[in-house]
Amino acid sequence: MKRSLYIVACIALLPVVGSCGKEFLERYPHGQWYAENFTAEEVPYKILIEGELANAYVYQHSYDFNASAPCLHCISTDDADKGSTASDMSWAKIIDAHTWDASASVVNQYYVAWYNVITYCNRAIKYAEAAGEFDSTISQEEADYYKAQALTIRAHAYFRLIQAFGDVSYVDHVLEQDEKTPARSNKDEVYAQLITQLEWSIPHLRTRAALVADGDLGRVSQNSARAILAKIYMYQKDWGNCRVWTDAIIKSGDNDLTTPFDEIWTEKQEFGPESVYEIDLDYKPSLSINSAGNHQWASIQGFRGQPNGGWGMNGPSALLRKDMEGDPRYLATVLSDGEVRDGVTFKSAAVPNPYYNAKVYAPLYEQQMYNRNTAASQWLNIRMIRYSDIVLMQAEASCELNDLTDAKEKLEMVRKRARGSNASALPYIDTNNQAELREAIHTERRFELAMEFERYFDLVRWGETDKITGFVPGVQELYPIPQRQIDASNGILTQNPGY
Image 1: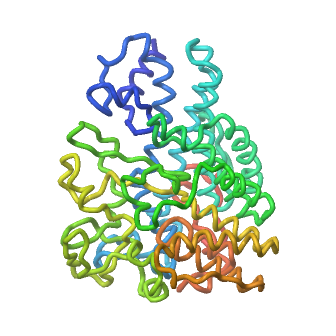
Image 2: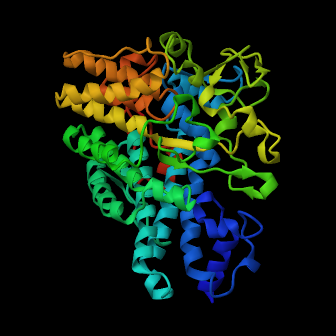
């Protein structure tokens, strides 16, 4: 009886995302749980697993993540400003100024967001592994598919935590009430476990193309798992293995660079060939579909003024704008006061930096579809890992391995797409000097991935933190373990040096 009640409770609380499968979404009312859609025989176990997976997917666009990720990944660099008014978003000021400490609420938000994702993944894994015991209709193949998704999402969460905090508390199962928070584990030991889990997951996952063909949007793909593997090896400076996995992604044919740069963040390009790891949001009032809730990824960073698109956080800095002058990607990266788009003149509010992140701007025609009547862009998907990132990772790995021919080839792939129809822009880089090519690849990552998820941690791993104003060497290579988490663990968790 307790198990049945627990299942019903999970179902009742189930957040619905596009990744929950088209059969669920096709039942009326669209995209919502409704008990009359299911017989008693249909409800229990598969929906339980899907529910925990749905929670894991959904929490990757929670407010905790939406507010904290732009801070820790972008505003912490000289390429992005806090944005908004001088008095607004005080929790982001300390990141912009590099004065954070272990009490910073925004750092705690980031930490909590990923551990909540991990908790949901652990539950999904537990239920998937026990599926045969409770539901004979779930095949081993299907159970393994659920498990592979959860392992991949969890590996990505741990990768991001290690990026930010170094050694982490590694939890690989559902903690019982009497279990204490595990002490922090060496990051390389955690990486070793993630590598094994991801390698197991790949053959049990589906390709992006297959997911798109079935309309099963939002789930991680084989290349999602390969990308996390490649990033782990890149951060370990294991360039050979990094290139093994970037090469596997490139040769898979499941992704490519055919999407024009200025269309990457549009609704029509969701889960297109640029997508390697993408978080699905959907908001279509006229169809009774809302998997976004009050999603704020775009609104937190959106244009502040008229038309009102958001708070104005994570704006392109004067330095980034200056350095990107003449780059064909500029207009798809920077949204400016006084600019005219879709026949609308943008008028910024009175803020110190009247420039905004164009990558979170939804075109007017998207705003007017499905009776949305909003500029908040809560349907805008989060592109966590893009294909151009993978190609540039291979360029970097090849450069470090002194395979300059391959490095230049991969660098040119990205520059060619960015060049578009402007043949005179971004000329081919044909240097046989490793140091010069390395610098060119670093610059390309900066412009291609501006205000996304890479800049701060790229500078740290390159040893180029002198490019960050206010950076404290020997301390700010990592963020502090939040003090409230140390306190909650009764001192089991330890602090990073310097905090």
